[in-house]
Amino acid sequence: MNQETRWYLIEAVMDARSRAVQDSFTRRHELSHFAGVLAGFRYQGLVTQAEQEAWYRKMISALGWAPPDPPPAGMAQAIRLEGDDLPSAPELDLTVPAILRSLPGSQDVVGDYHGSSFSVTGVDICDTRTVVQWRVSPEPDVAALFPEDFDALQAELEGVDDWAADELSKKSREAFIRGKVYVFQLTDDIGTQYQRTRHMGRYGSEVATGAVTFKPTVPDVATELVVTWHDVGLSLPVS
Image 1 (spheres, rainbow, N blue to C red):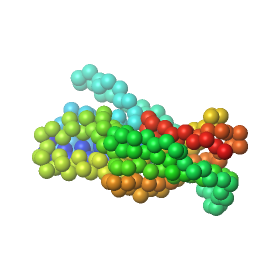
Image 2: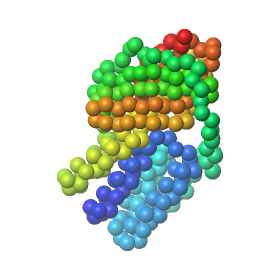
Image 3: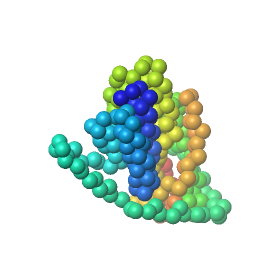
Image 4: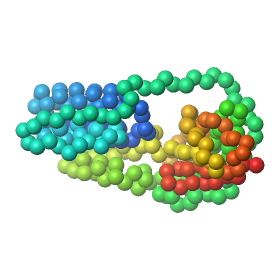
C-alpha cells in the first residue's frame, strides 16, 4: 500500500472515531461511502483484498459497531448492522425560553483530570429546558482521555513518514476536540431523563468554555443536579 492511500485510510477511520454518537442511518451511509472508496482502491491495485477487508472492519468498529470475527479463508461474509433504517426528524423548537431561576454553579472543581480542571460556572433553569455553563482549563491530554483510540492510531501510523505521522496525529487530536472531548451529561436525584439538544463552546488550548442545553427543564421536586464530564461529575443543589 502506498503512503497516500494509507494516509487517507488512517485519517478517515480516525475521523469516524472522533465523532460523538450519530444515528445508525448516518453511520451506515458513511460506511457505504468508505466501502466504495475501498473498492476503488482495490480496483486500482492500491490495496490487497486482505487490506480492504481489514480497513472495512476498522471503520465498522470506529463507527460504533462490533464487527464479527473474520470468515475462514476462501469464504465470503455478509455483515448486518443494527439500528434504525432512517434517522428521526430533528425536533424544531423556535420558542425563546424564559429563565425561571439561575444557579450559581458548583463550589467544587475537578482538578488534574487528564491535565485539566473542570468546573460548572452556572445553570439556567428555563421553562422548557436547562442550560449548563461549563469551563475546562487547560485543554486536556486528548490521547490520555481516549487511550484505546490513540493506541490504535499509533499502530496504524507505524511505517508512515515522520512528518505525515505528526500531521495525522495533530489532525486527530483536533478532530477529537471538536467531536468527543467536550461532551457532558446531566442527571438529577429523581431520575429525570435529560437529552442534549444544543451545545455552543469556545475551545482554546488554555481555556475552553461553553453552554450545553438539555431538555426538559428541572422538575420542581428535584433537589440535586449532577453534571458529568466523561467519568467525573460535579453536583449542584437545586434551591
